[in-house]
Image (tube, rainbow, N blue to C red; front, side, top):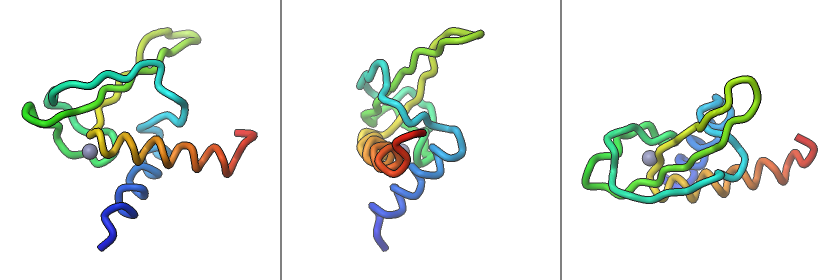
Length: 92
Ligand SMILES: [Zn+2]
């Protein structure tokens, strides 16, 4: 089984399902797990694991901050997938 392929598929699904944006995060923070679930694989980020927190400034009618938690390796894959998507649909 190709783990890399499975994770890319999960990242693609997270994007198409609206669970993750496709743009560059406004802020990326690293730290120990906060007990939330990973936005890509859906697994728990336990307190002993390293996690990445990515933040997006939200403008418009309800300005604020959208925050997502990810495993560092899932973040790398999401970053790769979103670049692939942008390359495929440059006008989007
Ligand atoms: Zn994960």
